[in-house]
Image 1 (tube, rainbow, N blue to C red):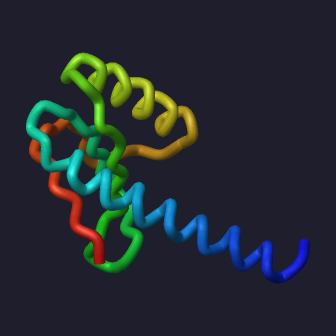
Image 2: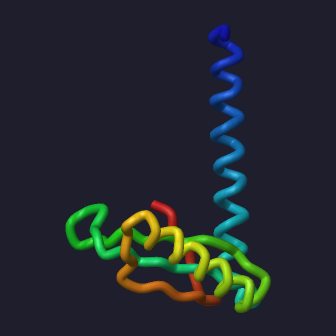
Length: 95
């Protein structure tokens, strides 16, 4: 692959990530959407447990069904979550 094409693809990937992040932040603040929030027992940094956020889901039933499947997969892989829930009051903050 030549260098100009690689630079173009890299710039396109960054632009897509920025657009996707901006859309996700707005979607997270809508009260009629639900998100799965899973907090793991181990920490990614001292004092900061690893947290997994998935969504949005259009209903609480869909969110709960997805959460159940994800928890089963985590347990099958030997990972035990500290807590798990479906929430509609999630706010995403990006550094």
